Length: 234
Picture 1 (tube, rainbow, N blue to C red):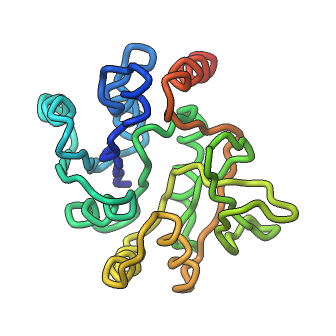
Picture 2: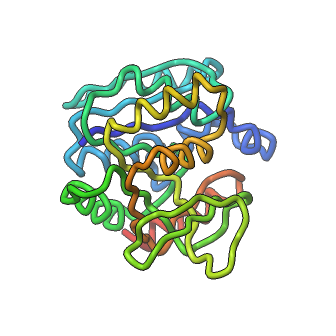
C-alpha cells in the first residue's frame, strides 16, 4: 500500500490564533502531526509515502528532508489552489497500485485506521474505500449517501433525509482514479469534493467504511481536543 499526505494548506487560522508552528509540525503527544501520520502509515505496510507542502513553510521542507525513512519519501513543494490540485501534483510522483490519501490535519485512532486499511487491502470488488464518520464537527462537511451495503451513491454539500455519514477526509483508492483526476484538471474543476463526484459519474465503485470519530485540526482550540482524543485512544 502506498500513502500520500496533503500538507500544502497555509494554516492561516492557526497562525491568526497564535500558533507559531506550521500546521504539519504542530505536535500531538510530542510528535509533529505529519510524523504521526507517517509512522502510522509505516506500521500499516507502507511501501512509499508522498507528501506535498507549500512554498511558504521552509521549516516543513527542512524537517522532511532531515528524515531518514526505511521506505521512499517523495516530497513535492508547490502551492496549489485546492486540495484536488495538490492531489494532482502528488499523482505525478506516486507509485501505481492501491494507495491511501489524507490531509495532514486529519486525526484518527491508529487502530481504527489500521482496520480500515486492512479492509481495503482485502477488498477486490471496489475501486475505492472512503473513511466516513457519523461524528460531524467540520464547518462545511461533505455528506456521504450510501445504500444498505455501504456502497457510496452520492456526495452532498447539504444534509438530506436519513443522512448519517460525512467524509472523514481519508480516501483509499486504486490508480484507476488518476485518469478521472486528470479529466477534472483539464475541465477546470476545482475542490476535492467535486473530484469525488466525478468518480461516481465515471462509474467507479466506491465503498464507505465507518469510523466512529475522525476530527480535524483547523483552530488552536482543536489541538487540545485532538491531543485528548489520541491520548485516550493510546
